[in-house]
Length: 402
Length: 156
Ligand code: HEM
Ligand code: FES
Image (cartoon, rainbow over all chains, first blue to last red; front, side):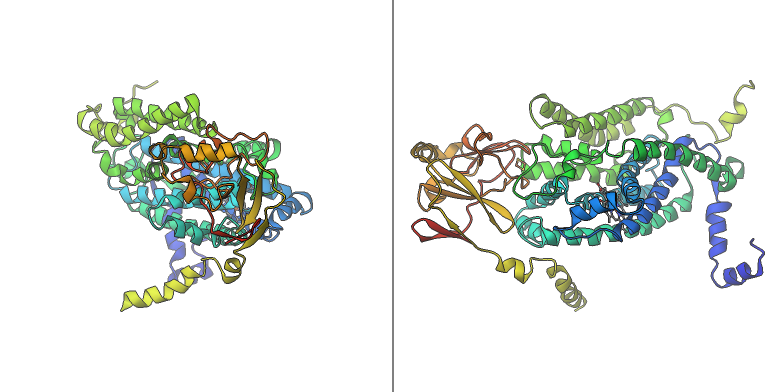
């Protein structure tokens, strides 16, 4: 194909074909990547799925408080394949978060945030935050009870800002409560932000390709013998992973489409009555638990934001020169405790904030910050890592023949 | 220079997101209080939020007036929160994160202090609408209102 005269004509004037060939085809990749490395490309594909289904949904959706709920019901009942597109979009948001959370924990375990990939990691945290904003605003669009009250509670987080809080919230709402103006702007932003995400993902990949992928051993490639071309080796591995992911995805979309949702969102929004238990979408639950674990409005909000922002400074909190958790026996243990802690916080976030759940979420919140601010820095100094292999290919070549 | 010019360019964009003229114009509501019996609570709609009107009983007023100030997270005398002690008028929005507290309808929980209870994160308000327990930092807001007649108020 590269030799077709038209391709050559274009490539000479705009070397986009050369660029794509270099970055997506020949691109040298460590030869030892395991399946945890599939989740980045999966996230990219889900973003594309969200944009495609979102655009056609937007053609049928009405961003007005009197029509939004009914327009979504019309999508479900009357629009050709509307039910499927909406269920793909709604469950796609959940899968997006599953995949991205696994992707992040992969980075945490293998030390992918360490030099020289700090900026790559920080751009990833920005992606997470923009994703959260997008998903939050998307959930408001169907204008059900959870949409409305979720929007009210989350926008009110900003009222905790000293002095300007009230003015900021009024500005966010465009009124004195969550109302039509709010719905309208959330729709505008929900349409915009995914395209902003695409741009940030390009930066993410640009930073990635500067030094190439990290790998399960966390050591740098010593030469061409440690790398293989992306295509066909990793295209095929990613394609296989995609197939597996889509099987689970299809199961949710076709057999349990509302399992991850909340039934109250099928009740139209009512500004005069708050549902007995407001719970956010599952992917926000750990953060919600942190918010509620502190009995002070401002501090609760600060802790919640801090739990995400701490990821920005993680590359400087972890001073250990060894990247991969494989060679860090104590770090590895605490890594799994952190995973457990996040799951426990997620469960607490779904329960009412009282009695034993409140205590558990307080312990969970305490541990979360202890992990990042005390355990990680101390391990960097105190832990003795196991010896590292001399190169990526060494463990393979030295392994006893079977 | 550049900063001023950028500011001048960004301000109209940002300010366009603030409440528009027609939203500001809808800002007052008149309420006839005569049908409300002693001990009864009603909700009216003002600026997209509920306003609670509570015709308090003598015991409720007494309870509200007798609370020592040092027991209150946001200290305020009951008399500073009402124009006529019988009528308590409040914005029915929890000062924590904006849920509507329970207690307006008969049978709903009124919390440990007999006023209102917010189920979202467990805030308790007393018979003067003051915060007593839970994460909310402030008392329920008293909206601007005036008695246009003996039993008619204008909110806003
Ligand atoms: C980052 C990618 C995206 C995420 C995470 C996301 C998330 C969501 C979520 C959680 C909902 C609520 C689903 C429900 O419960 O009904 C939603 C609804 C919606 N989204 Fe998105 N979305 C994304 C991209 C887009 C794009 C690019 C568009 C338009 C171009 C779009 C248009 C819509 C529309 C019209 C609705 C309302 C219809 C419905 O409720 O299904 N979305 N989105
Ligand atoms: S919104 Fe009322 S307690 Fe949180």
